[in-house]
Amino acid sequence: MVDKGLHKIPDVQAGRPLIPMPITWVSLKDVKIPSVDFVVNGMKLTLVPVVEASVNLPANQRGIHASRTYEAIITAVNQANRTGIKLEELAGVIAEELIRKHHYSTKSRVRIKSEAYFRERAPVTSAVSYEVFQIILEATASKLDDDIDVKRFLGARVTGLTACPCAKEMVREIYRSVSNGGIAEDAPLATHMQRSYGTILVEAIDNMKVMDLVSIMRGSLSAGTVELLKREDEARIVLNALEKTRFVEDAAREAAAKLLQQYPTMPDSNRIFIKVEALESIHNHNLVAVIRASAGEIRNQMTRGLEA
Image (cartoon, rainbow, N blue to C red; front, top):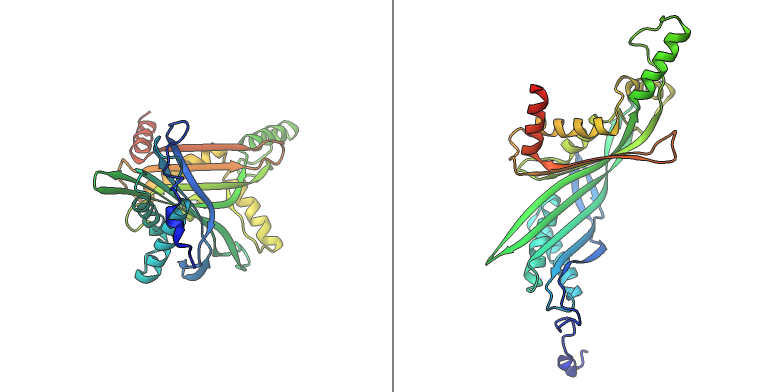
């Protein structure tokens, strides 16, 4: 039973802060929500999404009412269960609900991540394995007078290989020097390879599918990883990677180009984020390449490149 006297307790969060300074984001992080059924490549998966939900705070408000953030998440999840909202739309629903519950906030941001799996076949034996990737959902909401403007983003993080083109060419020159030039141009020459992670996050448009983004990102690396491999499969993946050597810079650019080929009607204003990270095998450091641009900026750069 709630003590009737509790209504007299002051609203401490609504008090004036000692230092009247706005806060860009105040967040609830690592919030696990009830499992969600999601279909990926024909497989019905049960996911456990993890949410980070944030609102801004004005200078005259001491703190957020944190329970309202959690309530906004649960309200959106319950609404999704009742009305069948797709997982891709969930971040946007939460972002909008945050603005409604935190009346003092004018902006909100939601990030949702969850592991998922797709079926993959080994390149020679066709053995089936299940490859893990990460679904990424983001949304931002802004209060505009009586309206709330929501932007939704869809993305994925995948695993693959990058094979160094520089070392491959150096190996070619060494072989040529010791064999008096008797090395075929298409010989599968050695190079160093590394496990690499590719992330792609795009301001969503209608009919955008997360598995399209997975395919774009995996196809931009030298090769994809496969869990179940027999010896002949391993050899084929190594050869595939050697035939398609990539710097992280190459892979990031390739993913940007493939994305706009897949979705040619994407508005120029839509934001795109691509990141490729290679866990270097012959160094104690790693390499990262990032592209952060609008679809229009990428189109213009590609056009200028073709004209050069």
